[in-house]
Amino acid sequence: MADVKKIATRESYGNALASLGEKYDIVVLDADLSKSTKTDTFKKAFPERFINMGIAEQNMMSTAAGLASCGKVVFASSFAMFAAGRAFEQIRNSICYPNLNVKIGATHAGISVGEDGATHQCLEDIGIMRTIPNMVVINPADDVEARAAVEAAIKHDGPVYLRFGRLAVPVLYDEADYEFEIGKGVLLKEGTDVTIVATGLMVEMALNASEALKAEGINARVINIHTIKPIDREILVKAAKETGAIVTCEEHNIIGGLGSAVAEVVCEECPVPMERVGVKDVFGKSGVPADLFRDYGLTAEDIVKAVKKVIAKK
Amino acid sequence: MNNTQLELISYKIRKHAIDGVHAAKSGHPGGSLSIADILSVLYFDEMNVYPDDSKNPDRDRFVLSKGHCAPALYGTLAEKGFIPCEDITTLRKADSYLQGHPDMKHIPGVDMSTGSLGQGICAANGMALAAKLDNKDYRVYTILGDGECEEGQVWEAAMFASHYKLDNLVAFLDFNGLQIDGDITKVMNPTPFDKKFESFGWNVITIDGHNYDEIKSALKKAKECKGKPTLILAKTVKGKGVSYMENQASWHGSAPNDEQYEVAIKELNAKIEDLEARA
Image 1 (cartoon, chains in turn red, yellow):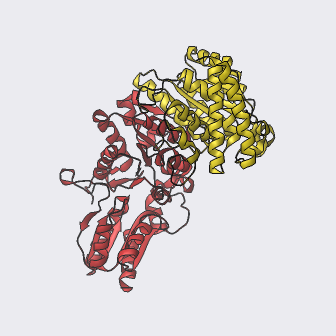
Image 2 (spheres, each protein chain N blue to C red):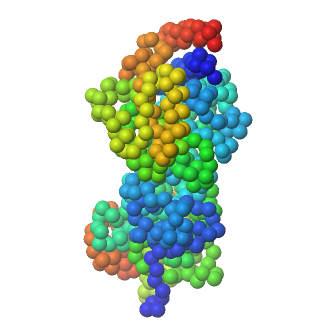
């Protein structure tokens, strides 16, 4: 993987906004974090359409609703903790209840935020955003997917929550033949013994785990669920039927996120043994991302362990 | 419209509000009655709104930030012709489109869904900002509650409107002095409103919220004020127009029973008759 290009999905977000800003009349709001969320790239290109809201996320979300009610397509950005967390009720009541065209660009999601520590490591956002009606929740795995997701969000009529990371991650897809569709899971690898369902930066870990498992004679299917809501029920049920065991992987609390969403579908349609790889309902801490993945059970090795555990339950 | 005509409409609005809340057996009469005069002037003298074209992109916008006073807004929309008067008594019923708090998706004439205090004024700011971005000259009006100003988000909005020089925004503050638990200065004193909004960079005009000359004059001054948003601090009487509701915190969120309703309607009808004779 030495020569694989790495780029943080927050960079992808910033770049996408700036390039799509030519084609689409979008307005971008930020809460004094544009240097980190990378909306400053859009700000430089289209200063008249960039509004700094200052450190006031609740105001940002309700103001975005007002702008959207007048026909604007609005991106409202901050760190996931403050966008989804602090302004949760504004997102729910000002944006989602009236189904307005506001896209939430939430960067610095998950434990990979690293050194800033627990208060800044949002491990709940997928969970809380997906419980709001009308909200679409997307967690892209790489640069190609992230940029496609931003454009798909613009074209989608209604609220979208886009989750991006601080950490540079490998480019997994070839832009030339990648097609993004909201709500459609991506089959990355066929397999018959187990399915590893991953989202966001855990997709890379899942692929690495599948390679390790192959060496041990375990044939793992790998699926990337970029859209946690609406989730691709078909691909999941097919995987449950055909492989009989599922391991989910997310940079999120195992309560409420991808694991829970997958369990909901699988339990209803085709119950199979499941294991959830993720943060086990604890707060994060400061550290470099690699150490945090190790300490919180988010490595490829942890996925391999979970696979073996779930296969034993088949 | 002359002041008597406007006042007549305000009492019709009051009657609709009481009709709605009584029929629903729940709702917020006190704060609905205190803003009826302001709503009458806004919808019948000040704002460019179009009942036959409720989503006209160049219309003036109104946001009821104190969304619980939807009964007054619906009464106003009924008088203006956005919704049929006979629908008022379906307020809050499961098979009705008239939600307990304003719903922009289903109620013609409602520009923003509100109800959670503090959010409406922010949305109003967003609409005013949209006008500036598009170089349009529609104006945006909102009504805040005095208790509502205890929400921190209101002050985020105040910072924002001033910072971005939203002189196309006019916020009325319904200063009736009472919230659910009583006198606002005793619950969590949000006053002095004028000094606070002025220090945030707003143009503040203090008026009697039931005096038509003062409401009109304040709106005119607001139009002339460039570079700053305007707060019209309207001293009002909670429950105005129904004798037993006036200045009573207990009528914030209770519906009159049948007996009480009859008394209220009798008083409002008498006032309406009097105004009709003079209009």
